[in-house]
Amino acid sequence: MNWTFPVLHSAVTIMTPLLFAAMGGLFTELSGMLNIALEGMLLIGAFASVIVAHFTGSIFLGVLAGITASVALAAITGSITLRLKANVFITGLAANLFSAGLTVALSFTWFGTKGVLVLNQVPQINTLTIPGIHSIPVLGELLSGNTFFVYLSWLLLLLSWFVLYKTPFGFRLRSCEKQSEALASLGMNANNYRFAAFLISGFTCGIGGSMLTLNLAAFVPNISSGKGWIALVVIFLGGRKPLGLLLGAFIFGFAEAFSNYAQGAFNVPADFILAIPYLFTLVVMVGAAVYQKRRAV
Image (cartoon, rainbow, N blue to C red):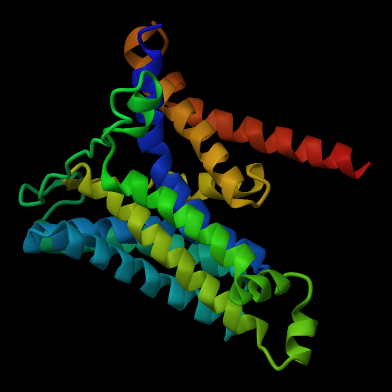
């Protein structure tokens, strides 16, 4: 099938923002906090990065701006939740709504549009060819010819595994979920580690959001398109493990890549095809819930 390798290659690109968001969400999840503000962090990071890249002509500064904006939102969300004892779900929803409104408002104030914002001064991001791997059939098409965002996501995933399972910080962070009293008996505040987890989620979402807009050199309102929510599903689908995130993100990336291909290949209503990734998300959530219930029995 001629479509297989292009769809697989596209899936690797599509899965990357999901993987960044899921990585950050994994840290907060293992600390005992469900971070539903991932969507807002992706969105505000996407907006800040493309704006700064447009005015400075620097991809690096654009990514740095995306990280800064996303970490700032994560810090606000974490502070309100942990210091002021606000409900984490309400705070997360507020962060998502705030990002959606702020990005559109700033786009209209600075550029006079509430719709698609095309920025011609954003530098082009080139793909990278890996010597030796590029010429290997199948493997070369999957692993080579991607942007630096893809390879950075794999590197950070490996680093996340190391931090979570091979460092004292990771051990203490994972202890926050069910053994916070043990941490307190050692003179450690579990909320400090949870706050650090929020900041880490802001860092990874800032990079993921940057990829969404810098690859397009444009900002589209709600460009995150539910990826922050899907990232939460990826975390549980992946068994709350770093390697599981990679597999889960690829599955969803493949679903969206196939839906993009199907728009031109099959005589099916476009609305139905565009709904494939979200329908797939629903099916996976239901399936995972049934599986866990049966295991418990």
